[in-house]
Image 1: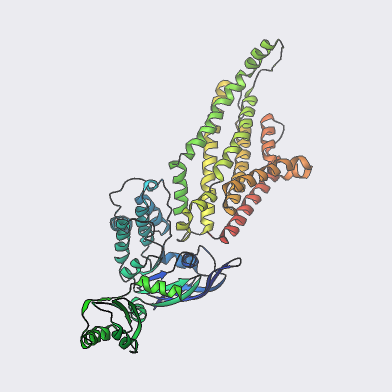
Image 2: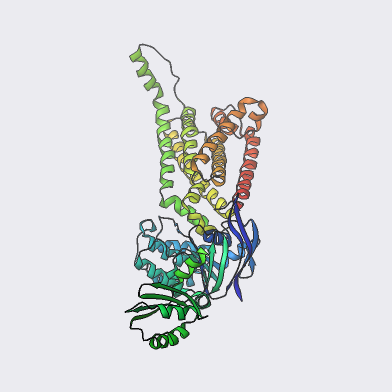
Length: 304
Length: 252
């Protein structure tokens, strides 16, 4: 079952097309990373999905409810963390969560337990100061806590780790990873490391258009090409000739005595390169295999 | 109810209630003695100038007239200044993003702000009026409670209308300056209208304050305010509805 189904979602601001006929599905219970460079249309998509903006064309369904006509129902079942969450500075975290609990009409018996739990996971239980004095990281963590108070089916997060120091980032990611399988997480980011750490599926958006949508493992399997770095004591010209004739080799780059070979097949490379080197009796100094990061794939796809 | 509760709390926590109460109490406590001492003040001033000005002995009417005169200026300013940021301020800061993506309708946001602001000014006005009345009857002879209450009621209706006008512009604009500017323009138009034609004088909401002052002087009866009250209520409901209609179509 899909938690989110986006069909031809388009948003134009005058002549500028911020989002161009986006089609996307997000499976229930998945952690979906919505990737793209700044200005790709990630925030616009989130704003359309949570009802802060209205689409020019197309629509989307969240938990089977249409964003154009059933936003009042959708709001009961989603959580939302904007890029820069802004709270009422005169409240404490507990007061803000109480305010949100009022909105969701959470009974007083459940409320205290729930708020205690959320303050605990947000690491704000001991903080008694007003939100006005919070750091960015504290605000983001409170932002996630307030988005979880209604046990949402889907939680939208726009750049949840941007602007945070490494510790703040780690805390927010741990909090996101702990959400469990009941909640579908749809989060936009340009920090690829975060996606690699917690996402099941990813979509890459560029200039308002979807470039790719895959499961993270499929994406890596499909697009990642292992890079073999081979270093010799002498120039391996003959090896280069042999390698270039092989169909499973994508590219060979020679730099004096160092070779960078991109293979379409990791296993074949690992098995056959040592034999080929041995047959040519080349003195090998270094043999290293690197798998490209999501960042490499992302940059490659954007460039293409 | 959640949002209304927050709005009411906001009034207390951010000290708005104390500011508005202080304004009304200041005039409630200042107007009666100023009216009482007016002849002596003017007398001593005129002596220094070598002129003799006869000031009739002040009455209870002068005390109330002084009170309402002050309220018609500073009270209006306080309403506008404290209402311009109601929605525009939350739009600019971004606090509404987290609210309207929850089960809080935008109509709820506007109505809650309207009710809380009405409570703020009506409550303060009631306290100020009570103090002013008690202080006045302790300084002057006579009682005119009914007329004083009627005049206060007309002022409250005018304030609520002014809150609605400012809230309307605060809802449709993101800029507080634009909201304030247009509220002042709206108020000016309202004030000019009665002078333009007798029909406006009879029906316009701006007549509320004139009639209130006339009631104090015994020159008008409360029934003369019937049409301005009806027009004001229609304007309040229409502006709230139009504000919500526009707000529902805005992107935040």
